[in-house]
Amino acid sequence: MNERALLTLGLVLGAASGKPPEQWLSALHDRLRGAQAASPMNTALGTVLLGTLLFYAAERKDNPKVRSWHDALTYVSTSVSVGYSDIFPKTPAGKAIGSALMTYGPAIAARAFDPPEPGNTPRLPASETSLRQVAEKLDAILLELKSQRTTTATSG
View 1 (cartoon, one colour):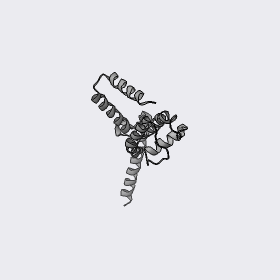
View 2 (cartoon, rainbow, N blue to C red):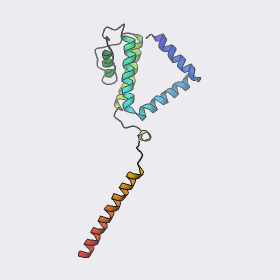
View 3 (cartoon, one colour):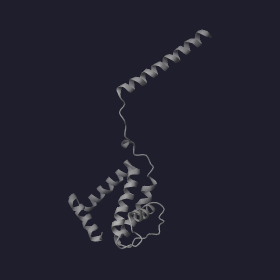
View 4 (spheres, helix red, strand yellow):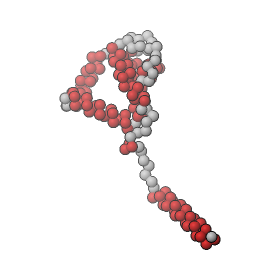
């Protein structure tokens, strides 16, 4: 993947939004931040998978250490965490991808196991039947407690 293609793709996407660059970049930033907060684990997995795909596409022909997607996965997964690998990017696109991964990856990895934001937690609707069963059990417990209190009061 050459840098002109990446730059052209970015410009086309920005121009298609119909907004000035600072507005669509801000909107993109807000959208990515919202997605990360909504599902931290999915963001971490998506970052690793997308990074692997992009890094492999950028480096496979020019880098003798990147012979398979597994090599790219090894580079990307270490770049988002500890930063240790014997693979180094050789192409300008690979270097840009690596730089982005090393800049944002640790923050994404650090939040991977955080729970989703409260508004994004899936809730299962309680059925009418299950609510009635809970209410009946609570009524039975209450009756049992009252009967124990009455027995204790009369025997004492």
